[in-house]
Length: 164
Image (cartoon, rainbow, N blue to C red; front, top):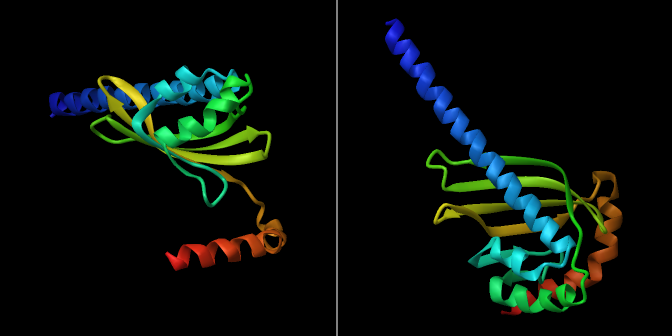
C-alpha cells in the first residue's frame, strides 16, 4: 500500500512539475510577444504566432487573420512604434497533453487597463499564439456612459452586419 501511495505521489509531482514548466513557457512567449511589439520587432512578433493566427482588436470590425494583421501592422512596426502592453497579471491554463494552452491577462497599455485572452498551440516543440483577443476593460459603473458614447456607431454597424 505504501508503494502504491508513493508511486501516486511521484506521478502526481512529475505531472504537476510539467504543467508548471508549460505555464512558464507560455508566460515567456506572451512576455516576448508584448516586448516585440513595444520594440517594433515585426519578425519576432509574428514569429510567435501560428501561420493561421487570429488577432481580435478592440474595434468591433477588427477580426484580423494573420496575413491581414501583418499588412495592417507593418506600417506601425516600420515607424519604430507599434504598441506597448505589459501584463499586470496573467492566468495560464494548459491541457493534460500539454500541447494547448489558454490564458487571460490584464494589461497596462496606452488605452489604460485592457484585457487580453487567447490560445496557444505547441507546434514542433514551440508554443505559438493561435488566437488573441484584446478588449478595453470598462468599470461597471461606466458602462451606461460608454453605451451612450458608442450608440450611433454600433447601430450603424449592427444594421450593416444584419444586412449581410
